[in-house]
Amino acid sequence: MALSYPVQRSRTIQTKLVLPPDTNHLQTIFGGKVLSYIDEIAALSAMKHSNSVVVTASIDSVDFLSSAKVGDALSLEAFVTSTGRSSMEVYVKVYSDNLLTNEKTLTTESFLTMVAVDPNGKPIAVPGVLPETEEEKRLYETAPARKENRRNRAMIR
Image (tube, rainbow, N blue to C red; front, side, top):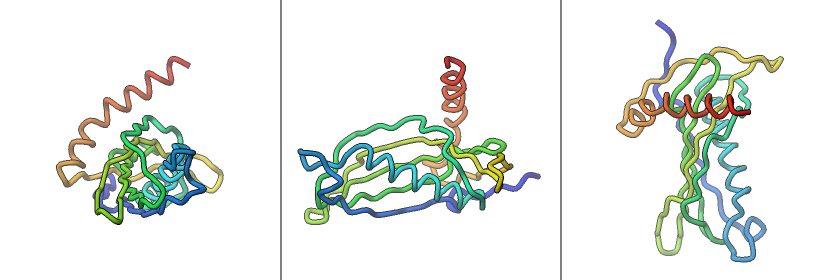
């Protein structure tokens, strides 16, 4: 049987403070800054799962649901939802925490595809994933449809 790891192995959590240089004239964080954080945490999650260097193959979707303001804390959570031979789909969610009011709001959700590579940049095999929680199982079961969407998108090019 092929090697597989529980999703929990790849779960990664980070907290970032929204500072004035990270924001626009409305004092809300730039979307590009959030994308940078998302790419970074997805890579960390995929590296934890695969024990290897990874590269970003695609950012499949990014849904900005609400904004974060100066002084808010961004809580990012990422985990591997499914795997292919060398690829890993990583789900990232971002919450905005107002530390003065304790209000927590989901601001962003995203799916990325990361590929494990050897020192020469060639793709290498990754372990499978074992979902345990209801959320993990739901994302695991819906992963084939997202993979098909990625494949269809690639065929259009």
